[in-house]
Image (cartoon, rainbow, N blue to C red; front, side, top):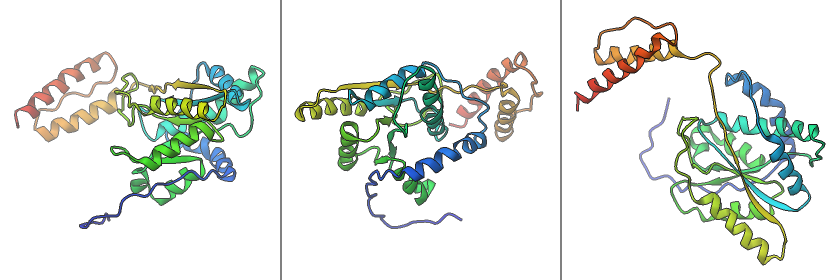
Length: 262
């Protein structure tokens, strides 16, 4: 049963990164189980050798870089990124004859509000996986300082979602927040101030989901529930993609009915 809070709560404290190699190894071992639980049939990757070569440059001290990844569907995106860094990329590096330092990993920025609904264990695990918290919608000076330091001095590269949040669309990119570019500029400034001759790179990574079987029947059932709630007459269930073209008309009709209540 959820509890009702009727008083002001203390401000959320910054959670610093506290990377723990043992936590990383255990999480890597559990990753296939999580991918199976989320119903992922398979993951296909493209151009992974490009990222692997940038990691090689990072290992040699030639480059500092940030992974700017698409964030269409949380929390599945984190599992997909983990698969890319922990499994797909090391294999691609091996295939291309590239040597990478172990562990192949990344620091990352996560929303400080996640542990509120995911539980305190999430904050413990994220921290020990090298994550650094950031409060969205406000000037989080501690979070920004941590991200800036990780970009310049972190043991690993850093991963950030430039969209700032999910939009549930694999094909549509939300407006990008300026933080990713700003952290890149800060890194250039910090490297120059320290007399370090390293290149700063921002690497875009796209994540796109697709259905193995088009979910027309599931969508029709959901639309039928909406129609029933609106008191609209029920329609015959469509069974294939051809007859599913009628779903748009039914959705349009449901929208018109909702507007009539305004």
